[in-house]
Length: 115
Image (cartoon, rainbow, N blue to C red):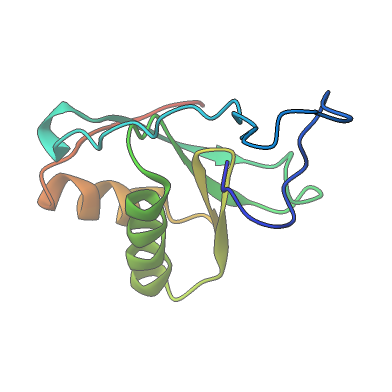
């Protein structure tokens, strides 16, 4: 969680200590594993986009910025829109084979999942 002026200090109403600094419950961001250690699953999803087909890539372990970079590369490769949703990459359309080939070429351990 980012620390900024819009962040709320939940549970703290008032402190009489003039040097009080609220400690936010932030989890340290995970280090990005090298591509050889990533276990990515590629599947077709019809639930998240209102019944439309979408390629879902799950299992990425690492920083949000690295996941966003990977998502951008995949969206450019497929010439399609997409997003990062809760640690998963969602590409609009059925591009499973194209994404699989790209990830294998980049050195990732990828696996087709689902029916």
